[in-house]
Image (cartoon, rainbow, N blue to C red; front, side, top):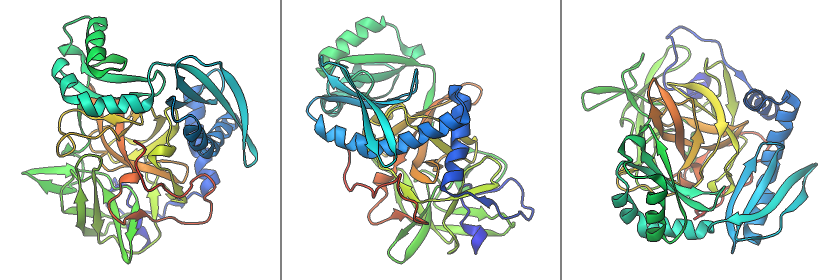
Length: 409
């Protein structure tokens, strides 16, 4: 049934009969996301669209540069001002080089620069080796990750728990980690994005009603399902645009370390689409996907959550370890953060995408007062379990190479 696979949100706003959503192709979808970019960065629509095309075209170039400079790579990121460019940050001092590298019909601006304090590999090794020691020294620890713009270990601390000067704490943490550490104070509570309450009941657990968001249609062999977050209830009700209700049953749930995903069956066999707008009037197919190694700080991405609707912003960290034991134990440093200000509890499982290219599934966020959001973080599609893969539609895959089989770390 066609409507039943339009499951970006588990519940629609009303049970009334709804018209079929408009389905966007790749070009129209990217133009829509470019409009959000243009508004955020103060550039004309045509320039915004050109920059998003550069972003997608630069994926293969970035992969080659990552290999070429593997021994000294401190970070890869996108700069948006004064002009768009891909930056390769190397540890130590090296002469700055400005390049134009070809990709299909585009010339991608690239800058090779030095000044990174440590390599990405060294920072990730320090997180693995010294995470518990660092946590013991930072009251109110809110997570940590590799900062690709500085080549440093970035540690988040709850602002109300900070009692010593920042410079003093950074020096102590640097001595323990063996790589430069930067401390960022943040007034936010970290949590999974599921919320109690809301307009529609989705699932019940522990005496509470919970709202979640579905992500992408997936397949494994002859099996087909829809994703959401593993920390959502095991049994979820879905009401389609035509008002029909059905129960989705859990096929499997994976919620430890680098994963927060469960697959639900019972959605039907219609086209594999996802909603991309707040009003759920526009749907898109998936024409391809990008893995975590293909993702850079500064990439412009969008999400559509049941609680906060549709919004777009920039990726900040591609190597983030959420705090506490939000991953069925300690979280790995494999989560990707996206700047706010739009995310809310109830967005769990939401799809993260650019155009018709899928990137990941929203897990949680750094929530501030008055329903604010410092940033949210998502699971890359690298970590879909076992043989499950996103269902891809169409032939427009220029911007989305086949996924890599291994982690970037």
